[in-house]
Image (tube, rainbow, N blue to C red; front, side):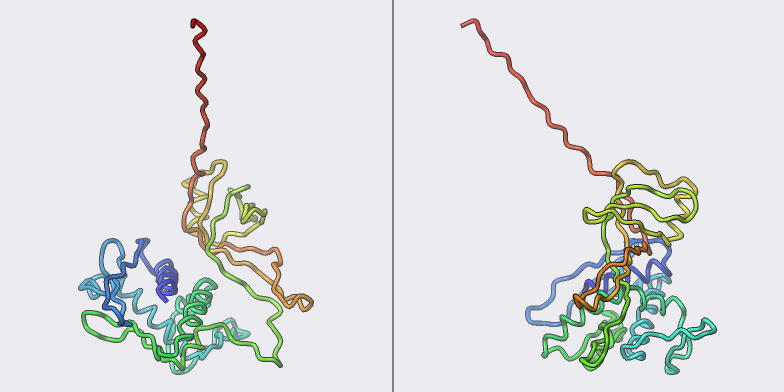
Length: 275
């Protein structure tokens, strides 16, 4: 569940934050207690468990956006917002106004995968009847999800009489080794991923802007930490999903130089033949 929170905060921070980094610090909790105290720290300030909640407007907005994202997931009851012919997104009437950022967050592949894994694991423990995030200062419930609502945060289950979706996009956070960068235009970059060569489009405009300005420098063996979206199609023969060869990088988190090369030196010692 904490991993899902990290992914959710990271995606929210990347969309509405001011470029600051964050970390989550778990504090000691009582044995047998299901209440886990933690600090969400952004630029050195405590977000969820300290007085900066009302001072730091960025932190406050991140928290509010996460709250809206959870409320929208609950209202959708496991369904996805429907795209209408006029390009608008249909959302439940119980939420009068939802920012497009919130919709993009709940549709992010990494967020969906992290929430699915978290609630699949929590649901196995029948003694847990709900998940809450509480402001430690005011004791206000920021997030409240009952056990009956757990399925709304997982991938829809397919019944025996239903067909698997023909295509899907699976999101992963992974490292890529740069093979051939695209410094001009919007062509597909060439990478090495898990020992295989792939071509991927980059849609992270912030990163691409740095590339165009020459801020990003490239050398042999450079690596990226990225959010990679992998397009897959369902194979009715093997009953498994296989990759279509379409890859999209939604965000470049880190550009790392190649690891230092290890050089092996040998010490030769001449033998003394004098005796």
